[in-house]
Image (cartoon, rainbow, N blue to C red; front, top):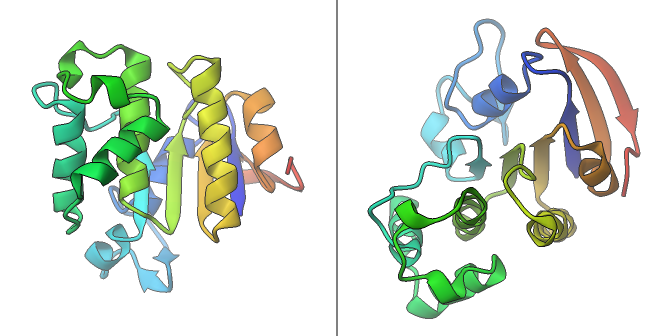
Length: 190
């Protein structure tokens, strides 16, 4: 299932994604992901969640290849060199795998963050403005990946101000305002 979080700036989209990624804790109530309590079982949840946000969490001194190897190790996965090349190829960065991330354009950094999220093999994929900084081919890449991810049983929460790109790939639209759900629409796209 893919869910599009829609709302003006300040409506709570990023905050919700940060809570789902266990980077923030709800100020009241409880939040469970995979049947686990975010407050008490944060580490167990993190192994099944991947976030691509405005902060891409990339190290400018590392190459694209080194970035993926590092993130794999942080997630407890030793990536074979072929897997790293394949992950870079999927996002259109195979030919720049040995270049330092600090020299990448914003779109290239976003593509690398998407490759990083792919190698984490999450059950829940959180995308905050995934189409920003990407050209048309990059946007189509995101749409294709979301469709594929959902078809393979994953869940996507996508915050976006781009209805043209979000609507066709999402099963639900959740409208947010001031941290509250103010609208829900089944069949937003797909």
